[in-house]
Length: 100
Length: 164
Image 1: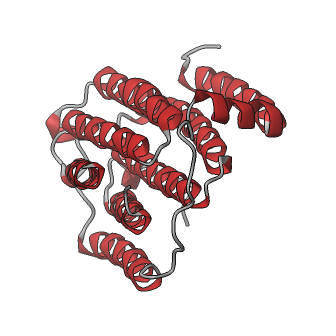
Image 2 (image 1 turned 180 degrees about the vertical axis):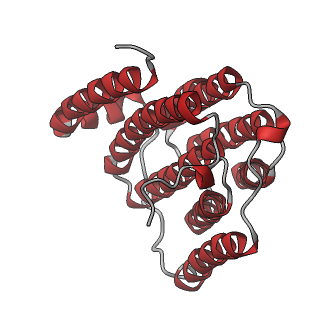
């Protein structure tokens, strides 16, 4: 039996790595991948708590998170493609038109 | 046995995540290390008795989402001098500090906070039980996700198409 605390700790570690990547990188594709990593860490926490609790609500929630992640990736990569077509860049520092 | 396997896959997941985030030179290699993380996480789901989620994790994340990333990276045909560098010192510091803060909070809260894991039956997390929960108790949420997928599909096509 896998210790639940350690699964939660792994989830926290992966979320940390994803958060640091999303904040510290400038490549838009890598930022999207870091967000995927954070969603995966949350999924791992949901599965671990579901096992702890003995109920299946966490599994259903994980399915919903997977659907949202797939939709987010499709739209996000569509934005990346149209951005690259217009500006020839994937650097978030070059796309600061709406920033103060 | 399963505890040892858990640590092995946890190490693989963390190594893949780190090499994805730290790899500044090559986005394709970053996406491939993300595949390693996803597959290791799928194995960990199986170890946590979430069999259906483990299968779906490998099918959807490793099989579809990361392949979509690879398609886009290769479609854009980024050359190495086009790769944006990592942020300067301040950005790196903010990223690492935010991550370390989350982790420190986690480590202080976690030990001893969880009760014993509940005893579950043989087929906990298999197709039958998750399917029953999904299509009986949460069928409304399941149907609403179809609207979300439709909206995302239309949005992605409109964003990425040259002329509508």
